[in-house]
Length: 201
Image (cartoon, rainbow, N blue to C red):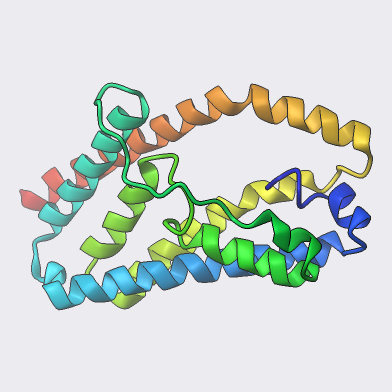
């Protein structure tokens, strides 16, 4: 996706990178807010808002800790996911703002394409546990924005040579990115666990 929606790729399709990326960022934020708001509403109906703050924080902390263990390979659990990716044919069929928005909406909504990290489910669980549509939408919005931000790293790719070097850097950064995701989940688990203990005393 990063390589497809770059200034080089957009120029070959006679599309404007700025318009495509703006549509992508906005739609990703909207997709995250939609799924988060739905889960927050579901949590409100299920009564999760009536649960104690320490229980909610503890649940989020355990989910993040479990997610870190799964992503690190310490727990032999396969994440539930379907093997679906966005349709690359859109790139040559629709205008930039259409496929940018379509891709962003699907990826921001978290579960419409393949799920590669347990942090996705930790974020969705947080939206559910918060027990309000506004709170869930806020969590989902943040998720969607963070998920879309890497696309901005392609802004300087205005030649095939730069694009090839970018490909090499992305491949080299795959493992560090995985470790960073695990570290973020451990930090979330630690903070949530600390707040849970503080709330219960």
